[in-house]
Length: 219
Image 1 (spheres, rainbow, N blue to C red):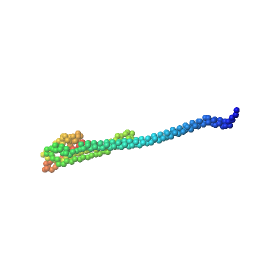
Image 2: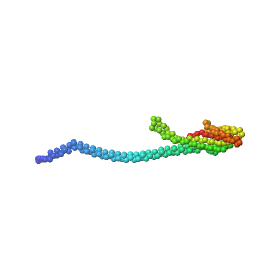
Image 3: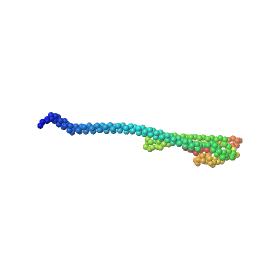
Image 4: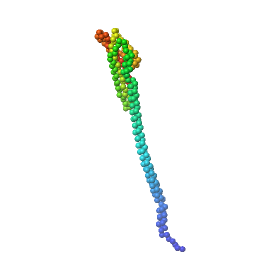
């Protein structure tokens, strides 16, 4: 029976042991895990880039909406200011002094032997600027709107042609009881005698000056 000798048996055993070495398997597994981690990290990086891109788009939209919202607020403030000014103008137009109404009231209260020679109307408007709210103090102060105070004074010069020279006083009382003047002058103001002068007796009349101070109106 022939005898067979394997001269490479030792080398083959060594190679087989090297192949079965656990350290090599660990290295293979570690390399595979590292490759998987690299793939996963690349995926997360790509996903974060997409998320950042979407975030940038959302921020642009938010900024656009913020600018639009601020523009809407500014327009609302301007509209409210215009509306307030229009309301003030309507109020001023509805309550302004009408010379025709004044002359009609004077015609209705014409006194006997009293002749008006001069009519003067003084209209003065005192404006007060508004103030902004103060918040940098211990006590916050609210804003104050601008206002205008209207002051109207009607001056009447006339002649009392009566023989007794006392009709001017009756005319003054008639003006004070007239509905128009009673409503316009208010409770505290009235018709006052500002001047009374007796001229040359040969002319037979007395000169007088009456003042009608209207109630002040602040708008």
